[in-house]
Image (cartoon, rainbow, N blue to C red; front, side, top):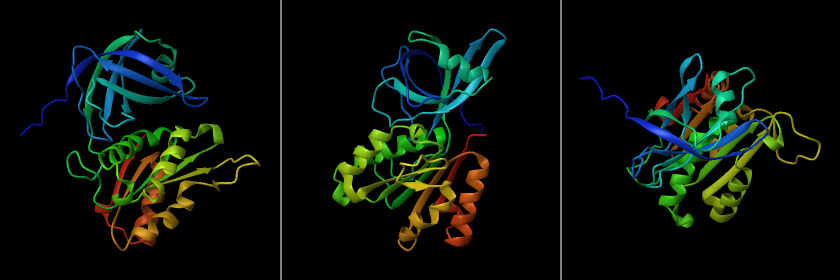
Length: 251
């Protein structure tokens, strides 16, 4: 049986802001819709009306569903990239077509509920976008942090200013205590940086190992090379199964 085609919508850009020197957060609204439903971790395809013809580009939705027709994405500006250049140039009020939501990289949890076991989220760059949706959903549906399963975000970028939503992660860690741990790591740290340094694969075993005995889900999002290295650590060093490791690549 052929699966149904993903829905198509007309969307309008409502607002935009820079999250870092190269990443723009954009909030879209689906026109004519009362709500838009997606599973945390899913993505949409924006059909960009470029002069040379329509250009589809996929972006993860970077927040949990909230019962409205609005959804945010995070777009890295790539030098010479026609899609990202267009999206960094348009202003609120721009309209075009959107296909989705779609995708199977989603939170392992009962419908509308929190994860049943510890989860470690590993991302580089805008790979953190779908993980933000999962984490914000988990926190919203389990407001009692004292009974929530532990969530850990290991987020790798080059420089301190590249840590997307840094204040939000810090505040969430403060508010939820042991229920959420934020572990940024910089591959090019400045001399004043006191946190982790190096690539995420150098730290993932340390953060996952305490949860292996009771069971853990690990979500990894970024470029293929990073994902392959992290998967190797999880399987060969920690003995995790394929069912424990959930991945989505951005290249």
